[in-house]
Amino acid sequence: MQAPHSDLPTITADILERLRQRRPRVHCITNAVAQNFTANMLLAAGAVPSMTIAPKEVRAFAARARGPGSFAVEILDSVHGLDRGALMLKAKVS
Image (cartoon, rainbow, N blue to C red; front, side, top):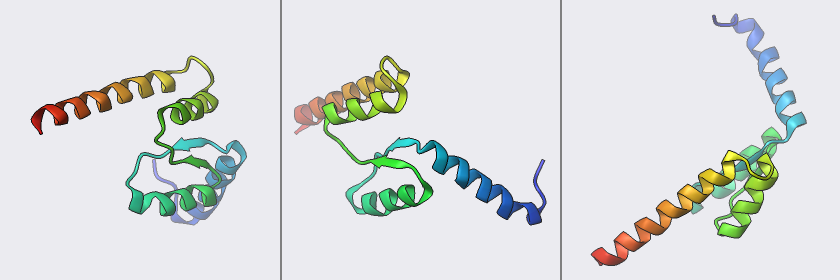
């Protein structure tokens, strides 16, 4: 069910207010060109962006975002393992 167009500004304002109250932590995986724009948009919306790529910093950010033992840390471990595998494959091909 779609809201009438006249309700959209009110709904949008409500969503932005709830977002700003919650201040979600968002880890961004983006290219260097888009990092500044992405971070500024998230800050304007009320989020806490992170552009870090250092494994220890990413792990710490994810732990604070979800709490120790969350699935976010497990996903990061998987992604980090995939990254290592891709680097090893690249080294073998080169």
